Image (cartoon, rainbow, N blue to C red):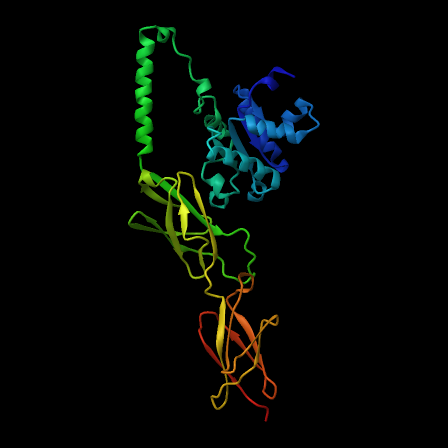
Length: 356
């Protein structure tokens, strides 16, 4: 094992093979500045490892910072790349990683199209003139105590050291109390519940009014799909507390009526609110009298019968709901009736005629 391989890893570069030239350009620059960098195309052959996955996992676990390199948005969502940066983001949110995650993209990508978890952190557009800026985000001076200068010898004085320790302890206690009681911001995302299997024609979530009930105060913000919204200056006493929440949107609601807020981004799952679930009406003849026991076929695959009073109603499950239905009404000795039904139009009257 070489001396370079024994060093701890400063930076892990995550990339798709199509971006190898871009990744190697950053790799070579950082290496020339004395940083230890893991790039699979360069480092794995040096390791001589037949188990690449274990080597990559070890590098991910040891690295201080991560750089995600991409020239296309879809590369960021490829299985290996997403797994790597997703692991680092998870470790950072859990407090096990203190370094930086930096996304370096080409001019072909717009920041708004990046995954929200990457967009939350630093993003830099690649150019050779920006390499020093990239190095600044992952350099040895970036929030890493092991690279701070060692104290001068005079700090080890028996008279000075106790006073410094007491002062440091007092400052630490003051900082802890101050931070603990400082108001914080709550960043929220709203997105469709991942396990939902909806009809292809169900309306997409476009926007809504999100309300959080913090204490006796209602705070509302307009929220867009995959876009964060921030509730600022929330009292520190509410950190990790459950609060009531709701969203007002034409076809969507929150999966739960309460959330636990924290200093980390909160993701709120959305489900259909039932506005498109109900189909109901009355079936009558031309004299206005009820026609009982009619067969009402919905989109050729679901059937319900009218009651003795000609009334029918059905509540459809999530996967069948959409913005328009085709109804076919049949009854022996009557002409079939076909019509469109738009949820939200309420009770409809279907007039059945007998053949001439």
